Image 1 (cartoon, rainbow over the protein chains, first blue to last red):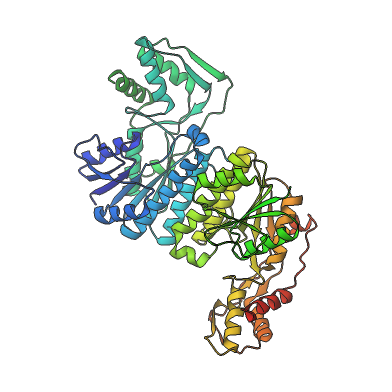
Image 2 (image 1 turned 30 degrees about the vertical axis):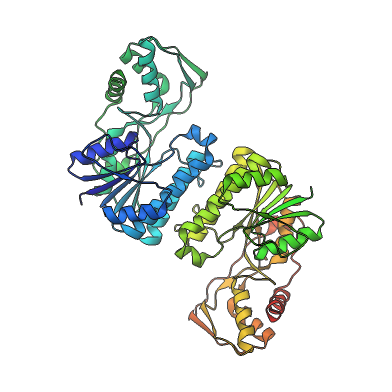
Length: 293
Length: 293
């Protein structure tokens, strides 16, 4: 059980996952598009998820024990301007991976990363955005493929991941702007609604959760990977301003008290997963990362 | 309101739809892959649903008032051996059409044809087959695109269509085998469970229903297009043997009384749609078709 294949390996979560499994002594196969992986111990393998045949050939060669699928178009905003590529990447890309697993690595344990904000047609009337729809369909296909072909698929529904490294998440964007502003370059930061709540979880805790799900979780089970806590943008922004000693002006389109969020992560904590990074620690590490860029 | 664009125009339903709209005085644009359309009055237009850009350019040129989307991989059996192409054709093909409508013909009324056997994740535990899953996702995307982009999408959930013309449906397959057998060539016919029930509807009644939905139905509404009656394979088979004067041997894998099916077509009959072909008339016309081949 020591070969792990990771898609989206050069992305925010992918890099942390490669680092984690490398430290754990795994042979890490990192799917990359053109570049090589920044971690030198990691084996970079060229991979185009839209090429079903190539995916199958790749898994036949690697014969991974664990697969973590992070490659995705993960921006809800961008899904409005690029709905076709969002659906193609998130749905057909995942389907090509599932078919490759079925054909070439049917005993691999595969983690599919959905989202807590995926659309839920059984409990809500209207889809939120093409991204939410694509994540719902991705998970539906994954659990269906697990049922149809007796594959060992496990699903994580993940909240907002934060932490050191390049990310387009709101904490990282704001931290970066704060540092730039203090250094004399830059504009303010604009929120849609600064009183909005999110469940923020450190990406390193998420990676540990994914491994926990793969090692101790159940086949065709779905786990919420979240802190279970609700944070307001305004509080996070105040903390980041303080940490960066930045006077960056904050503006907001709306200013209304939106409901807090409460994602229940009991199924994950039952696997003895524990959150180890506090919100403050995560924010400090994000700031450190951008101070050093 | 006189230009109609039909995908899957050379298929079983497509040909009947082209004939119907041609008789009604419409300018019929029939999407074809390589061949030209068998009805000479119909305008054949080359169309590859997997080519999003070409689809958009085509709709920009035609500027259809009505669109009927029949192009699909429609065999549940084949979806087990070709799951990738089933999902690609039925999901991404439809998405490319929806994007083309959004970009080039946003005022067109578009009919999407789902299936009464599509998977229903909100009311059943396990998906039935990749085909059922693909039709569910097709309809989910269509109604979502209607909501997101204010498009005039209407959905038909259609039962088993029968009638004259080339079809791979069970009535057509059996009628063809009966005629062959009587003429001296051939094997018997094998059922999975000869006591299974289906809701059979004449394809010509379905086409009238589709037009009724487009002319009198509502935006983003879903209509069950079915006879509302349940027929057993064994009774249909007896009728076909009689009509073809064929002694073809019938065999069955299973022989158990499965539940009858009852699809409620009230929403359609409320639009003053009426079924005009009896089951017997449909079977007679199928037999006539194969006798003349």
